[in-house]
Length: 186
View: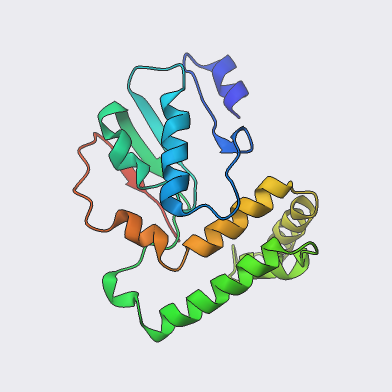
């Protein structure tokens, strides 16, 4: 996508994805991941203001505050794990924490139950069209079957950070001072 946009528009797109150019170590704490990612952003050959698109499922969302003086805006999609203080310690939080622990183990092991993971990811309906939902599940399973080891490490870390770390990274941050901040989440 970045290559296509660079060719078609007068913009420069830097796509930071797991493994290119960023190789997170398994077991990183969220704060370490964020510090490493800030270092990668600092090394980009771009000094002017930029628009940040965050599709990190909430893991890197708090970087917006650290980068705020360099941003012209931010678009956040696919957030997860952003909970109110009251949620922590609740029965629902305990259940989420237990499920996240199971997901971490399912993603760390040498044999990954891709079918079960796919069912978990798409256990809620994406649309009213069951055929479409089945096609998306099948596509996801096929992609997951051939996913890199870096993908699975990052996926396990996301699950480990889900119950608490992501929300804590955003708690008590001041209001952003950006022209445009759009957050989208299911």
